[in-house]
Amino acid sequence: MAHAVAQTVADLRQQRRELRRELARVRWWRRLIASRRELSIAQMAGATDPDANMEAAWEALASGAPTSSELAEVIWPGAESATADLVERLEEIDRRLGSYERRLSANLEGVTADMIDAMGAAR
Image (cartoon, rainbow, N blue to C red; front, side, top):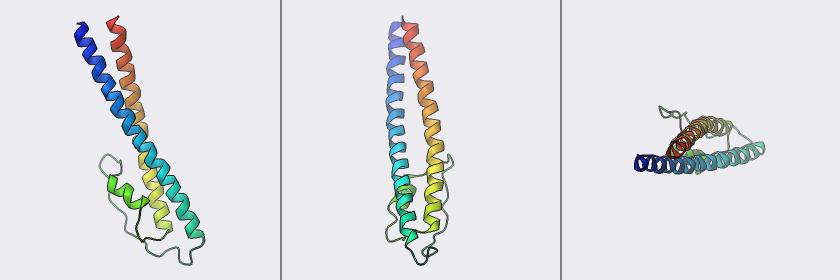
């Protein structure tokens, strides 16, 4: 019995580490997107044609979380100038990341509660 509880606690600790690592990654991307958005708005303020270089919208993942390539595309858009379209895309990516962050946080809280319960059962 004690071995099973110890294994459960170890598994839950590993889940928590993975969730915390993913949560840190999401928060890093959100900070980067917010910074890129601010830079785009600043660049647009001096632009003569804010509608130049408009791109087509992209398809989101079924879960709603953006892919790494989507994130990279809006953060490092290459030769693309800052446009209203880019700012809108950054805001949409941030909304999706925010939703994903909330799901991760809820999952982390659940795993933490399960780990505490398992540790309490071992006593």
